[in-house]
Image 1 (tube, rainbow over the protein chains, first blue to last red):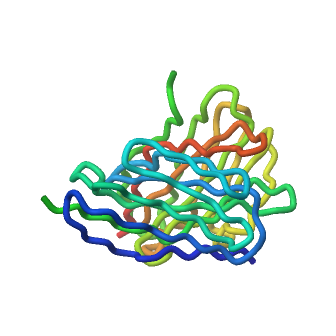
Image 2 (cartoon, rainbow over the protein chains, first blue to last red):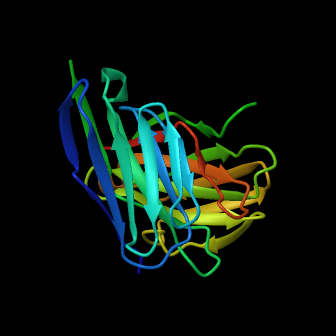
Length: 112
Length: 114
């Protein structure tokens, strides 16, 4: 059974600082996604990572995937308050299933 | 283009009542997913459909839950009878179903069972 673990679950950081969120998963997968959720809102897709070594960047966020280590990272550069949200990674099941298993999420608070 | 549309956005009901949540996927998307989000358990997949056919319903909690997709543009999730532990946000999502199928989520239906 595919299990997805994120850490940290809570992250409080100051504006201008850098930090990394980690996403580990338990079985082989060929696709990983990062989503953002604001309080009381829906989930917004940030990145789609489909191959080993994939790296995607958008603004102050950069995501990477290491399928051999079963690890993805979401790196935040020079954080700003607007990045405060909960970030989820989601991993695709193998065997032709379209099912995505989500991590518990990392609640990020960026303080001025 | 309209995204995934869910209704109702909020529902408050009493234990034992029937609840029906509705979802309209993005036009042209072949796969539809129902997820439930709670503080304790996070996001859990309840069921997903491909081309209107249920593919994986292993996440449906018990017989009180049922889901249908009578056509490509409409799905329902029904809870009968509802219980307080069913209180959660229920999200519907759709995707094209192809490789790298990214899920697009609706705004969710917040259910409170008293």
